[in-house]
Image (cartoon, rainbow, N blue to C red; front, side, top):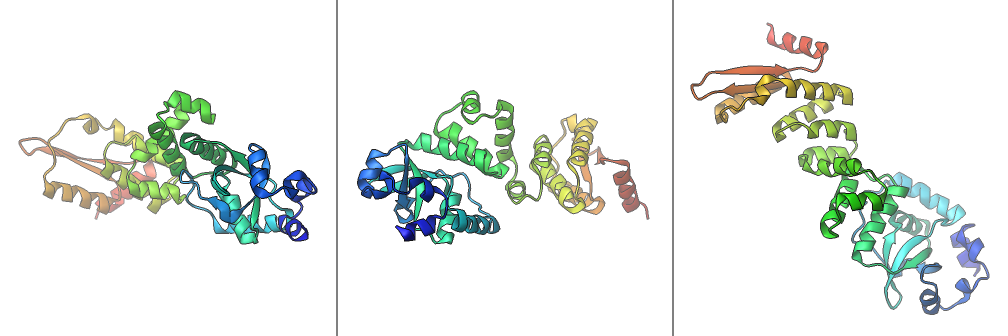
Length: 293
């Protein structure tokens, strides 16, 4: 018993010391204590296939592992029982990983009965409430709940305690190009940047302004200004002919040369216009400096 207490630190071992939970055979204790706390071997726990979090900060894991070594695991993980001494993780993967780093062989756990839908829902809710998932992970989790569990946004709003508009804003992120989604995930741009980009029509335009965000370190307000100026352009509301390849290439070259959103439009007779969008007076000055000799 002294080895177990040392591994657990002053966490749950102090609460469980001398209890029937510590003394009972493991198979009996788990069967009798579904819904309560039991000590479960980490090697008997399978990963949760519905875990929405995929990235774990190594520094944070190391810090948590050090805390576990000194204080023990205060908040039990949540498991469901699969069969003879086999369990599946519902919530608490970060604690499991840190416990392995800390050298623990057992962790305190709540044993629950849950079907796949409940597992996905509990994993999502637990992570949102306890850990900051990146926006793309949250969006994917919301999308999976609605598609795989056939839950509408209204019901999902009640289950996860989020406004319907908030859920909608997250899910819309998944319509952005993969390059932008990766940047959101890696915290190169914020949710505010992403919400502004979503309102733009056309992947090429989204990518173009996204690259400006990175190269110019644009604020959310600056991006919103660029988006408004782009959308308010009369040409953006005109129906024009699809640009031939050589004009598309020219448009891209102008974009690169001026470092701005340039739009070419042509009609069937070959006449057209060139529109250059800018988000501020300073940006206009920079564009003019590139145009003038």
